[in-house]
Amino acid sequence: VIQMEMKAVVSSTGLMLLFAWLSPSRALYFHIGETEKKCFIEEIPDETMVIGRYRTQLWDKQAGSFLPSTPGLGMHVEIKDPDAKVIILSRQYGSDGRFTFTSHTPGEHQICLHSNSTKMALFTGGKLRVHLDIQVGEHTNNYPEIAAKDKLTELQLRVRQLLDQVEQIQKEQNYQRYREERFRMTSESTNQRVLWWSIAQTFILIITGIWQMRHLKSFFEAKKLV
Image (tube, rainbow, N blue to C red):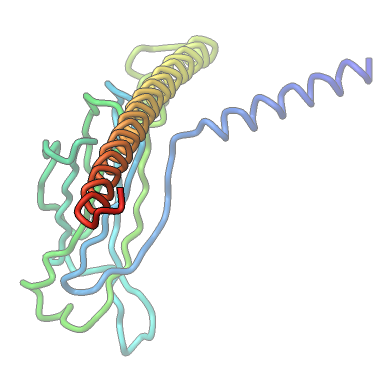
């Protein structure tokens, strides 16, 4: 019985570590200057919902610490697709905000933030701390709200969570296959270019050798050495 319980604990721990490793949630904070722009790269599968939340704190010289920003100080959020050609989102928010978008192309999405500090004399020469939390996939779902809306039991809600996790894992696997395919295509293209470059080098060496032989022959003939 003890061995079975130990196996169950080890199995549960392994699953928890697996889900923690797969957990597509990012939380961090950073500092920006008055005209500074910060960009982050997030690898996102296609057809995946992303929710970002942020809050700002302004450096107070008198208090010697970061305090909540004034309502007039906001952030501009811009999100680009992996090709950096299509702007998915470009919008001005307040000092605290929440942005949402859905990816339609798998790959590295660029998330950029900068303040509207040029309009705020209060921020001149100061520092701004931004707390950013990015949630991807099933972590964007508010399960208590879903359970209350659909009147789900605890078991039904857990099944719903597991189904969402399985769907997200499938999307991640599809994205990894997509990356592998692109890497393979890049490798084949590089190998082909190296092959053609080697052939071109060989051809140039042969032409150069023939030209040198003819030039030497004409030189010796002109000197009446041959």
